[in-house]
Image 1 (cartoon, rainbow, N blue to C red):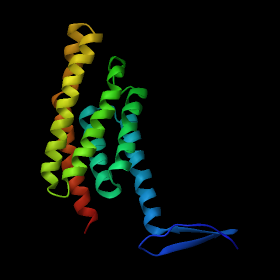
Image 2 (image 1 turned 180 degrees about the vertical axis):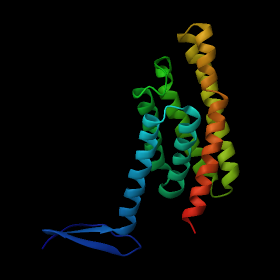
Image 3 (image 1 turned 90 degrees about the vertical axis):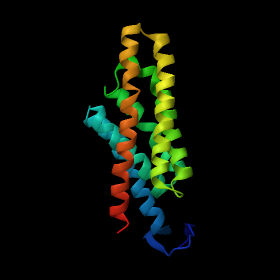
Length: 185
């Protein structure tokens, strides 16, 4: 039998025979499973639960957990999907459609800043990343929505992109910490 491809890492690999030999390392398989699970949570919780105060912390926790277990690059990929899903399933009002790219960027900012600081101090990383996400979303929403909507509607929409974003990011950091601590026992 020919070996199609062997992925070598520091850990032992698990050989699976599928007519031809295919070798998959256990850590890669576990990371793929974690990635798929976190992607599912980040993508479909907003589709099922249409309440920002519930979905926000869950999605943000998923992003923090993704950084810890999968790294910044995988977490960014996971962070790009929820906004599109939320808009598609009506969690985000249609008037917020112009904000979707900015929400994606804010998720990437949260991930990158948290990823940079989390090994030094988890809580400082969560607070700093949450604040930067909040400031970015609040400032961009004020400008973008203000240009596209009537003032009365723009004020209400900008409010969705302000303090609730800070709250949900911080709560996501707390939820993530509890899950990370529970899995490391």
